[in-house]
Figure 1: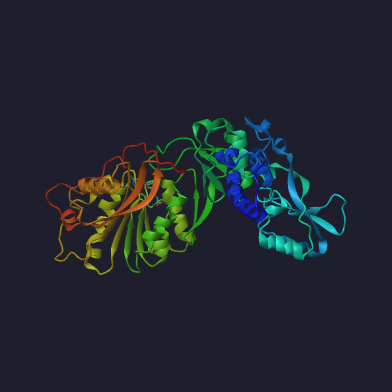
Figure 2: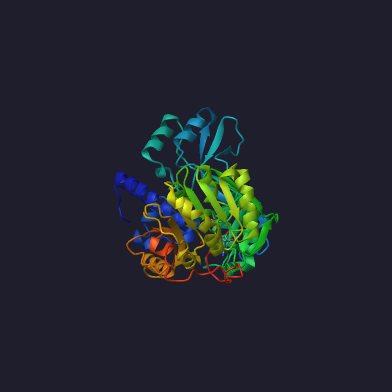
Length: 483
Ligand SMILES: C[S@@+](CC[C@H](N)C(=O)[O-])C[C@H]1O[C@@H](n2cnc3c(N)ncnc32)[C@H](O)[C@@H]1O
């Protein structure tokens, strides 16, 4: 047998325990520690089990739960064995504090229990088996503390009852869903609603998944799944309730403002909060903001709260209704005028009316166009919008226009599309901001530019009239909310 110097063995054991603990925790990744790396004699001598998979399976629910489609919480109950230290009650708190890194840390699991004899003088301190497998697993500092409190390092074994409540959602779902398939349990949180985007192979388990997400996330009382790609004009998703109450009226807080709305009938994406904040902080008191596709108000309301005058528009009557409601809720209704028009009609109606006076003033005019699937195409509405060109051009409106791109060069793509729409080259005039990655090969971008006077006062082209039919043609856009 290979001989080890004891000091070297202890150092090596500590090193291994640091390496192994994270490896073992990555059971989800199906990592199997290769015995052969260390030789079959080395691991047992260092205090590790000959079969690391035994430890890897510690928090793995019983195999019978695989394939379950209706949640049976009892079936997850099992008994696991964990290491423990017998500690005199007089020094219990001090010992638990000194062993912070080695004690059992699991939701709902105790760290201190009665010992078998139910003695008043001793308690068992339960240890994390991923970290402690033999007395030599303790660090120098921990070993020193145990000696100073006269606690023997000898490990006891304690049989612990592990239930559904002690498991994490990924552990439950990984045990239930077919082996080797993606178990992603990601969701967007909108107030009390968890919004999922399940893959096809997860659909047979959809109600169980919904129930698990609700159980494991305090405050979530309704779980919905997107049932189709966005296919409505108003950018809201069709959705199905997987678990909980069928209550889509929700309330959320974003950047200090409150919003109430019916999540099934309007657009709301919690992943845009940073973008809303980025743009709104560019507005100053007295500025005018035209929010062409306002939704329920996440640009409009903070802009008004900052002292800007806002003209906010949305074609969806439900969004319009909630937009007005949210203006009142946040006490900014005196700073906001609301419209329920097609974006093009808004630009060529209320905006056209207000712009001449605003361009003569000093305050900045901003135009926000967040309808990424279509907004770039709406830019042609600015062509020849005004007739009397002012003598100066310092106060041209700043446009923030959003677009999706699947191009290899998304920045160039969105700028080219915007330029095409305006029939004016924006290349040296604009900046492009990356907002977020919407799907594996799809980015959301914001193109920002001063609206060229050559466009605004163009006379060489007839203005594109708002269509009779207010809504643009229904279009399929595969924005994935939960991505
Ligand atoms: C992507 S959402 C953005 C909402 C909000 N600005 C935000 O940042 O969350 C686009 C909004 O445009 C509205 N919309 C869709 N087509 C429109 C159109 N042709 N004219 C005006 N609004 C439209 C939708 O109802 C939706 O509220």
